[in-house]
Length: 281
Image (cartoon, rainbow, N blue to C red; front, side, top):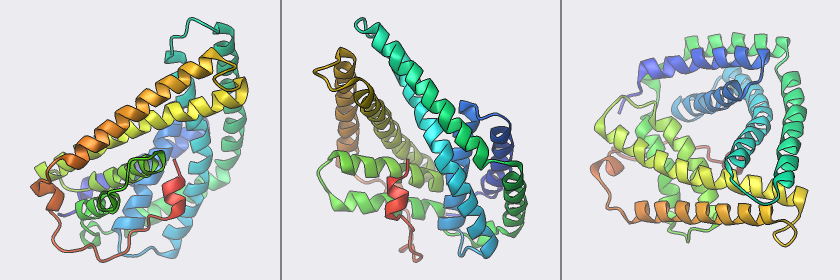
């Protein structure tokens, strides 16, 4: 299945816009846009393109540093939103205390992010982005749907019990696979597969957001014996985990459709799904 030229070209343009917005003011929307845009470019150049040149390697390295900084800010934004959505009649003061702590932590991480997107770095990234966009050839790229399916099949073939570690792998790889599949030209097969990945990503991502908040609250307020708020967060996280496991179990049990077997032959180039990429959020 060919790569969608319009979508691939748009990645370079949108990432440049998000970078400019982020350097101006790291608001939640611009932080999220930069992170997803960077990951999409990593998939486009690192997985779908035949080979990285020196400019592209340097570009991805620069963006990776900023993405990691942005990730710390994004995690705190997500935790704050989750905590504010939680209706807990008991311990309102502790909830306020935790909200304020998250705000302070975000301010600290935002300060570090601002340093990472200084004007010189932004200028260099924009220059390298333009160079990479000019060199990129959609016709020479690999089949995005085939690459995406291979990513997910690594876990599906393992048939491991759905532990937290496996669920975490599904969360990361389903996101990467979705970014790859979204570069495919529109088709029923691509739409079906992307919908499947979105279900996995939504369920596992929701669980992970609450898990991270629970870990933060435990460090701040103590364990379940010391705080009803922490106990409630553990309950919510447990429910999110069970839901994610149910979603994955159902999808594992579903019969394979034509879109799940639409690749023609193996994807010959190695997929760089490393320990670092799996552990990253």
